[in-house]
Structure formats: structure tokens, C-alpha cells
Image (tube, rainbow, N blue to C red; front, side, top):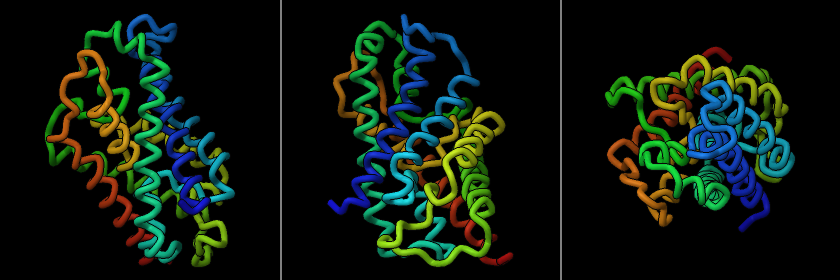
Length: 246
């Protein structure tokens, strides 16, 4: 595997270790942080982005999200030919990260009776199931993510290549994007758990499906297409508006 893609794997794995970890820390039984709540979770995910971008930014651009790769490509800022490799690396990283979170919290998974809580460590499910409005939530959240990323970067970005350390989260600076993710979680995350990242949801969901988690229940495959398709649509809409206005 190309070293650029290896860093996408590592960056996405770190994102899930920190993000899935903060969910497990907050809801798993007998965790010292049990009951820490939504604010703790949103900051944990934001800091996960911060750490992942620091590690992968100079090597791969730290997209760590298929919606970012697709949005940048649709805006002419990233080569479409590189998108499939990035997506595969990101999903693999999400899977690896989910497995590591399980290992860290194995005894707490065993002590927890709630199968929905166990799934929440790995992937998102809606608070109120309604495919249309759940999709709207993911589209809007991802639109905000991608469109604001364009504005953080500025409209004068040149088309990038993999060899040039591609345009992505790493080129923007870790802190603004981390705060952006925290803001999206606090303001828009309640309806669906704000996947806003297909790899963040699909990779760990596969891990949940495969791992021998005691009393885990369903992996929620009937819903899994929403946090994949919704972010892709949101990214394309953000890229479209960016292209129209710039």
C-alpha cells in the first residue's frame, strides 16, 4: 500500500479510537467516565479529528473521511483517480479503530447489558427512526462540514495531486476543523449521532458485525446506507455551491 494511503488508514483509525473511545468511556458500565454526557462526546470526537489531522496531515492531507475526498474532488481540488484508494483506506482505518476500541473496553462491553449502547460505540443510529429526515440530518451536517472546510481553506486553492501532499484537512490546520466538528455535534448531532463520515460509520459497523461482542444484538444494517449516502450527497452539494460561487 502506498505510504500516503497508509497514513489515511492510520489517521482514520486514530479518529475512531478517540471518537469511539469517548462514546465507550461515557456509556459503558463501570467506566470511570460513565454518564459524562453529550458535551464530553462531542469534544472527544473533535479532539479525535485534531489528533488524526496532526498525524496524517503532512502525509495524506488527512481527509479521514470519504465525504472530504469526494467533496474536494467534485470541487476540482483533488484527483478523482485517487478517491477510490482513499475511501478504501479510510474504511479500513475505521474497521481497525473499532477493533482497538473493543479491545480497550472489552471488560466493560462484557459488563454492559444494553445492545444499543454497544452498537453506539461503533456506529450511528437515529434517535427517532425516519429515513427521510435522518438523511436530511446527515446531508445538512456534512454540507456544513465540507462547505466550511472550503472557506477555511480559501477560494484560491490550486488543484492538488497526491505527490504534492494533497489538499485536505491537514492543509487547513487541525484546530479549526476540530472545532467545526465539535460545533456540528453540539448543534446538529442529536437526531442521528452525526456520522458526517461514511468511513467513520461503515468501518466500525463492520467491526461490530464481526467481533465476538457479548450480547451485541443487531449491527443495524437496515440503516447503514443512510450515514453513507447522506454524507456523500452533502459533500456534493457543498462542492456544487462552492464551484458556483467561486
